[in-house]
Amino acid sequence: MHIALRPLAEQLATDPSSVLLALDFDGTLSPIVDDPERARAVPAAIEALVDLADRGARIAIVTGRDAATVVELGGLERIRGVLVSGLHGAETWHEGQFRTRDEPAGISALREALPPLLERVDPGVWLEDKRLSLVVHTRRATHPEQSLEMLREPVTALAAEHDLDVVGGKFVLEIRIPGLSKADAVSSLLNEHTRAALFCGDDLGDLPAFEAIRSWAADSGHTGITIAVGEVPQVSTAADLQLDSPEELAELLSDLADQDNRRDPPLRGPEVNPQTPP
Ligand SMILES: [Mg+2]
Image (tube, rainbow, N blue to C red; front, side):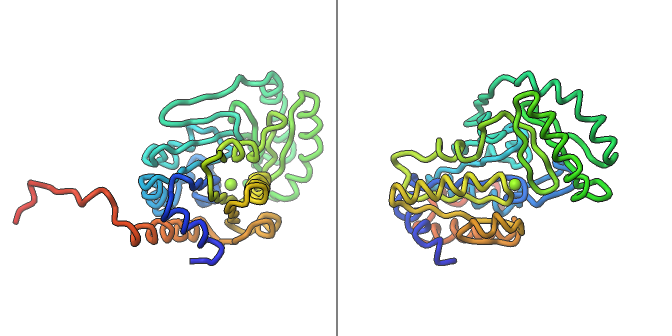
């Protein structure tokens, strides 16, 4: 296990309920795919999180997507007590309870105004509608980078007219309610019982969460660790640890769960099937 993770692993072994494991979804738990609806978490990562949650660790998924979709795509109901913070904290899902805010007026205006603009740049550019935010994707355009740059200014201007913010990412421009960030979502999860916290992310939108973890650790003197998944340079350089892929993160989470198992055998015994023939 990487040396940076040792204090967190120790804390997990001695007092799991004081550990917060917070993770982004797309590109972090699930490999990036062209069609976001086809994104699936790496199964081993979910297994490890189920295990860690059963032992008492607090698990949170902090995503730019809407919470309900990510719960479904990730099969997250299986993780005991998981909190899913969706749309950068605009909504939450916890133990089947869903909390969300009202749609801002500007979103419906842009829902109408954007498609013709996108179509003019490249028919491959498409708009993802997340109800409380809209995301322009250029990944499927003939020249993704170029299309993104052509759209950045007009989209930002249009959003500003309607009091909305634009945040860039890899081949995406996200139009959203101002002031929302993963930093707030993460900060609201850190409490007086937290002694160690981890955040894993892959894109620019995760940087505020890294910063929230770092300043909490500096202020409290507790353990804060940030992990970058993938190859976005600003994210890799901002993190304590860099991993190449969601599969590699799944391995790391499995290691954390396993080392915990070795110290303390699972409370749940093997399932006994009375029908099993001798
Ligand atoms: Mg991501």
